[in-house]
Image 1 (cartoon, helix red, strand yellow):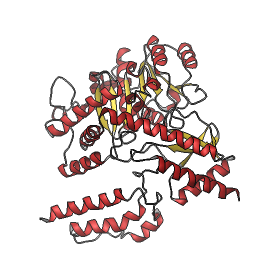
Image 2: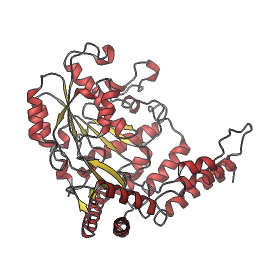
Image 3: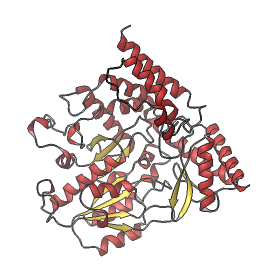
Image 4: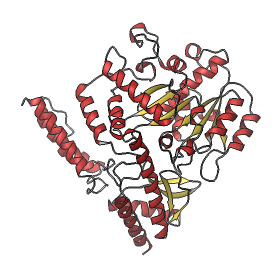
Length: 460
């Protein structure tokens, strides 16, 4: 074997050993950042170092600082653990080292995104002619979709924002729910709107947008270019907006409708959960993550638009040598901000191929069922679940804010599982997110027992 083969085999072995040990390893890292800094050689050497030696140094230096986020008992954020086929595909993709800008640079990457994008639209019940840009995650997807919305609503008002910018442009209304995700606000900052532009719509008891208040907000504002931001999957509660009714109201005002569906959009792939996102196909654009519920490696998200030409007009280059090389539809590089971009389509293709339609539906259903099991187990043990568990999110209180934070800290230090905290409606709460393909009922029961054990100790 040549040196490159041995090096890559060793790297694959390191990765496989790490992944195979996740079911039994503590979820917390062995070492914190301060400890790692003391152990890592911070001096840049003058002479080159053999690649095999570098790999061993990398593993020795940084493995103690790994958090078992891909494992079955990480519930702190909506983070999936990459499917086996998706991980293997991403490893191969790194070796292939393709620049996924257009078909001239990589026909393989282009077709992988085309096929995987088509499968995504079928699974999620979105228009077959929609464009799909493979981005880094929900922030990238929301920014791309809102840039496309900005392009469209201003063009409808007779303004070319790509040429003339926002100075002197007609005022754009942005209507969004009070419990929208923070990536919406950041996208508005990045796009020059600013966050003060948001006309906020009240939320209902479980965090979904109040449709009656949406009607009032739309009616009382000055009519003109309007973007309405809806949500599938509240980041705290999992609640989904009433998309059918909200889209109908937005249409009456000529608005562009964007749906932030970072994880909740996957409900559409399950026959038993699809009712939660009924009307999803009526929107103009959608954001969704792959590294959440689809369980592909970081980083991967999707900016999907029902109007491909507007999508491309908002994002594509004008320089001749950087265009998408022609064709009847926009090239993949015309739909995202980056030109130098890795080939995310291979891992998405592999995950969908491994799971199939039934596998994706089962993954969604199992995670929702396990979240309900979490809620029931914690309530039996004396904790209080404060949200209606409709998807994979559970919010838990242990009495006072201080005690809840104490329990969260104790659970993180215990290492059986990992959960984070959140502030929802003025209360500190433990947030449980179940989105990993490998999580079992036994993992949930073991985690519930650990949480209740820590909570009991916090009373003494």
